[in-house]
Image (cartoon, rainbow, N blue to C red; front, side):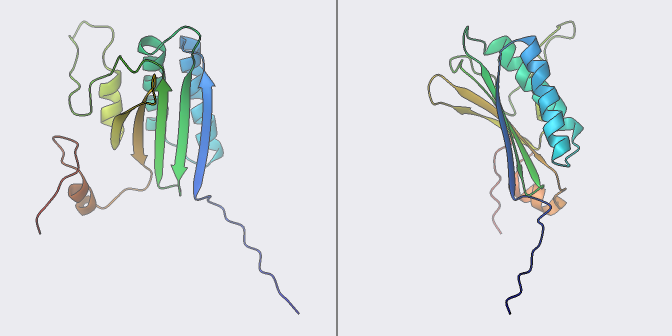
Amino acid sequence: MNQHITRTEHSAPVRQFTVLLSPTRRGARLARLLATAHLGNWGIVCEPAAHIVAELATNAAAHGRVPGRDFQLGLTAHRDELLRIEVTDTRDEQLPPTPGTTSAPADDSESGRGLLIVEALADRWGIIIGPVPRKTIWAEIDLVPRPLHRVAETHDPVSHAPAFHDA
């Protein structure tokens, strides 16, 4: 007699969500709402992710807008340990500052703080250029805290580049 053991896997190894949205304030607001809803459905409660999506989607609508072209929001959860957020627009000629080079705007400025918020909330973030005419701004959030010694081994706190330590 064959016995089959059935086991339900409660956490999928990788979960993904991708959507195209209009590069407008309404599209940016919808990006945040959809991200929050999908993360909630996956059992991931992550307020920093909602803020990062809102900032990146707003930047795509404000600075990456090309008439007739949408921006894309992508969410990927890896084993409920890492969340990757990607926002892709079609203005590759208009690049934001790179990680670690963002500077604060004037105190009375009404804009210019979005990537500072992303930098403060994300564990890592960066820019991917291409394929033409696209650029993708991505941010990653560790959903499971990493031990401090692992963080120190993998990132230089000043340059945000991988650190290489001689043992």
